[in-house]
Image 1 (cartoon, rainbow, N blue to C red):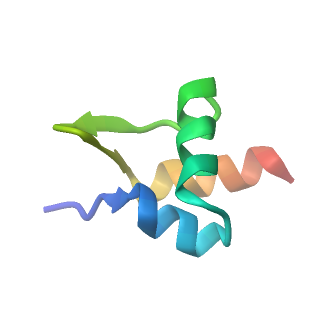
Image 2 (tube, rainbow, N blue to C red):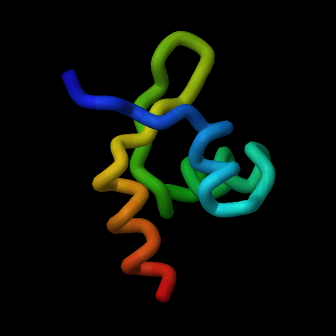
Length: 54
C-alpha cells in the first residue's frame, strides 16, 4: 500500500505552513486528493512539485 502524505507532513518537509500547502493545492500547483476533510499528497507528486518550482 502506497504512503500518502498529509498536508501537515508536506508542510514540515517544505518548511512552510499548512495554509501555504492548501494554497498550493487550491491553485492547482500541487496535486492532491481530498480524503474526508483532509488533503493527501502522493510522494511522487511532491517530488514533481519540487521539480517544477526550481
